Length: 120
Image 1 (cartoon, one colour):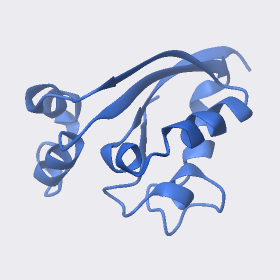
Image 2: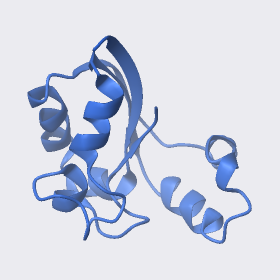
Image 3: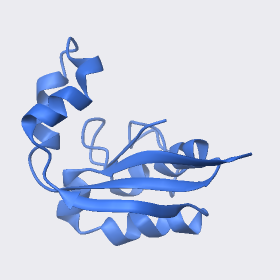
């Protein structure tokens, strides 16, 4: 495996619950390093651009409303096989189907409000 960098977002519901530290700890315990991090509120325009691939889907408006509803933590994660590791740590998109101990199983509220976003 090679060293990779991947993008992750701790979503507004997880920030509101106060579980930022727990989520970061899970990434670090799996061997990922936080290469960069920023607590911010995403503008509606930036959010619509970021999720543009979903623009025609029925959940797009709800997704943008949710992601702009409060602060998020934007992170660059680095490490060996970071993309795959990030996906494993996050768990399935639906928290009810996510493996026990994964971030989404522990902190997700629904498919839309599943605590974290991960990019390849």
